[in-house]
Image 1: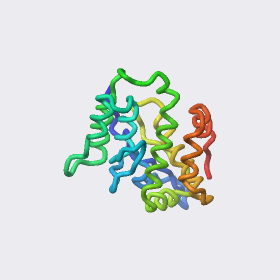
Image 2 (image 1 turned 120 degrees about the horizontal axis):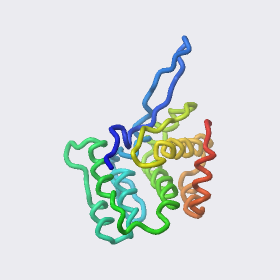
Image 3 (image 1 turned 180 degrees about the horizontal axis):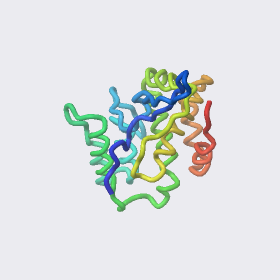
Image 4 (image 1 turned 45 degrees about the vertical axis):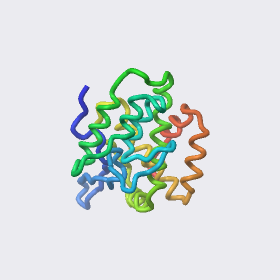
Length: 192
């Protein structure tokens, strides 16, 4: 399976012009799971260059060969968000050593990682808030469901920021939820 050209890309939205036509705008880079962040953000006791790196690494048991290899993979000098994201995505595309409950856990992990990233830098929070009131749309993805769930994760976090909720407390609450409840929460996300 090869990733589509836009896989991992920023979310986008449409704005209506005075004449009624719609214009496509890209959301800030903070909505891109391939974004390389500096400084790195922390999760599970590790430091990460991107959501994609953390997600691909944490699919595997802590300390396993693949988990460590992906965790230690840094962007090359001058490497784009997209190229680095695709590189770590490819490293994680194995069907061996995945936890039995991976399919139910992956949405909870992705939401937690995004919350950690937004906690790491206030400018990311401001950038995400700048997308209000638009409905975010995900880029096409060869990985089932991500073009649906990534914008919902972004809009859910945006809704918390909009009402002034402490993201650290939100993260603690999410970590206590069952994975099925997180999926339901994301499916209920609408325009705010």
